[in-house]
Image 1 (cartoon, one colour):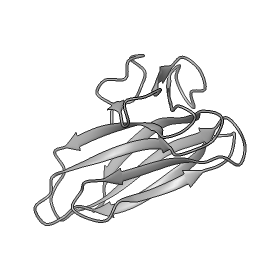
Image 2 (cartoon, helix red, strand yellow; image 1 turned 90 degrees about the vertical axis):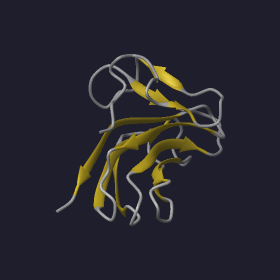
Image 3 (cartoon, helix red, strand yellow; image 1 turned 90 degrees about the horizontal axis):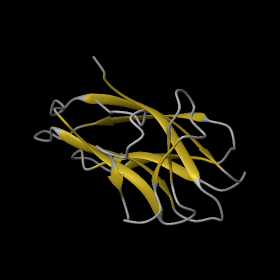
Amino acid sequence: MCPGFETGALTPWSQSTGTASGVVASNARTGTYSLRTGVSASGGIQPVSGLASGSSYLLAAWAKVGTAGEEVAVGVKSFGGTESYLRASTTSYVQQPIFFTTGGSTTSAAVYCYKNAGSSAGYCDDYTLIKLP
């Protein structure tokens, strides 16, 4: 449900702010490619459709930063509930597990990787979206 970056192209993801994010052939957790944000106010977002309304999901993704102590966020929004995200601040990949429940009539969401501020890029890879029983 969340295509990765192994095509080497950003599509079906898009830049969340229109600046500096892209897919690069470096800093991948697995495979060859990862999503790299810009240094600030930058990220990638992907709409996900075909979800079941009123259902619980787990979004699991991996993130890291280029400079320790800065933060990059993995998150989900537009699912009929309150936006939810976790931040990574290490230079090694850490998994970000996010649980969310779609609204009563919502069958889509938007998953993202976003870096708000700093002096170096953030990286995200290996997004997985799982419907929970």
